[in-house]
Length: 313
Image 1 (cartoon, rainbow, N blue to C red):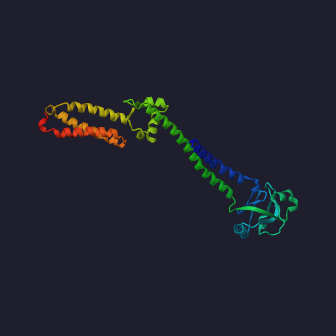
Image 2 (image 1 turned 90 degrees about the vertical axis):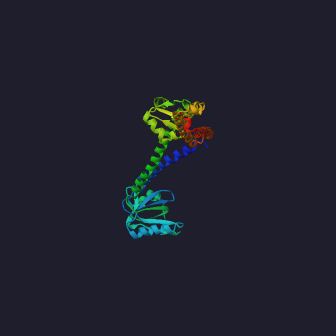
Image 3 (image 1 turned 120 degrees about the horizontal axis):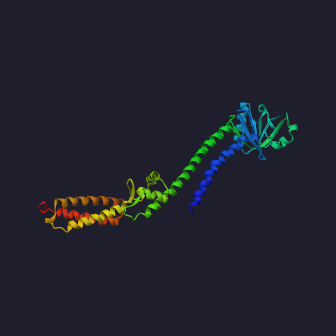
């Protein structure tokens, strides 16, 4: 699968979360269709999909409404009350003190919200019934606002996630650019200076050093970093092994009676340097180098074992 596809899906999901929830709640709560005033209110939706806020003053009626709806989901439910003028989209609401419900497939004259609104004069001050498709209950006057606040707060998470995603993608691109530039200079024994690398990747030296360490490029590429230069450990140790081999060959050409204390100490130093290189190539799983170094170390050990104090000048 193309790597861009999951990235695109991720971005779409984040944008959906970022704008979808707040948009929904803003439209839901700021709609004049569902304007309300009291602490207990419900949103009823009729068969046309229109919504109306129904407020309830009586606690018993409120609980009755909730219980009726919960226990009779498969039955018809009707909301009724005295219609009074109100400043919302429909220009009416049910008098909160008169609201009640009717449950079941009963024969009752009922209307849709828009039918009452279109014939408001004939419904005002009379008991009217609406058959509802669904109802949502809210316990507080500002429940919608609270919901919006919570949702916007939750939307901060997608914002942060999306920002971190973009930031990580940017850093990855920069990291890949640094890695590419470093590999160009891999075969140069003296390595590359930070000044030159900064020019190649167009980054300041401090930022460059931070990214190399943060993105584990130092470990991944086996780098040795000094104040002004970056070198590859492979080349450093390979060069060191070549120098050790040259020095060891010089000593091996000497007879025992030509060896001095300086030569003897040098053999120990060469062995220690080879042990360090062996440890590095073991960590990097370079089996070929390991074998080469182990042979050299074995040769030094055998030579040291064959030397007696009487042989040393």
